[in-house]
Amino acid sequence: MTKDWLRWHQDYDSPNSSLARRLRVVQHDLRRALTEAPHDAHGRRRLISICAGDGRDVLPILAEHDGGRTIEALLIERDPTLSQRARTAAIGLGLPRTDVRTADAGATDTYLHIQPAHLLLTCGVFGNITINDVGRTIAMLHTLVLADGIVIWTRGRTDDGHDPSHDIRACFAEHGFIEMSFTSPADARFRVGMHRLTARPATVPPMPPGTRMFSFI
Ligand SMILES: C[S@@+](CC[C@H](N)C(=O)[O-])C[C@H]1O[C@@H](n2cnc3c(N)ncnc32)[C@H](O)[C@@H]1O
Image 1 (cartoon, rainbow, N blue to C red):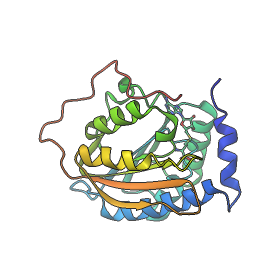
Image 2 (image 1 turned 180 degrees about the horizontal axis):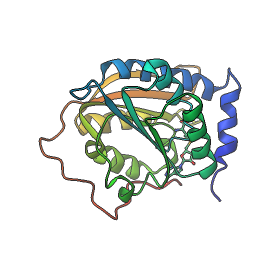
Image 3 (image 1 turned 90 degrees about the vertical axis):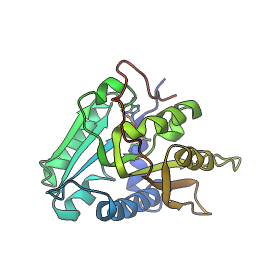
């Protein structure tokens, strides 16, 4: 049975919940990323959020940044209710350059006609897929992220104290990323990392079609 992601989002509504605290860290990092990420010759940036949920981490920050004028955002979310909420929120915030797709973010075919981004968020993903899929996804990120582009990601530690985020940080380092920040509050399980792709290969082949990057377990 798949998890009830609508219900999962309700924890955001309690300001002291771990999820609400995590949201504040993600948004803090995103504000920084929006000033430090590379941009095109016209000062514009592309952003991709995979498994975007209802978009509440990204959309208000785009609106406060510059009304979303310079950012073309693509949110990919499989759940139709959550993706519709994100669409409604984007309209309400006046973000016409935001596209919310109800699609499978784990399938490479979803990205076939998508240009790599200056910024990518993968929040609430790595804790829901196998470590092999985490490795495969990070290894494929250079097809989705431009040189010097920034990735913001999250992972929780487990109840027994095991902290898989350290393996994830090592995996980013192995694939050409340097760490910009890593937040790991002692009194909470969530971790938020921000990495920059500093060693993007000169030529990057497109995403292989018909391939699975990850599946939620
Ligand atoms: C833990 S929530 C994270 C939502 C959001 N990124 C956040 O941090 O608030 C995981 C989300 O991934 C979505 N999801 C699961 N599998 C997916 C897939 N293959 N493609 C796109 N979205 C998926 C779920 O519907 C859910 O909204």
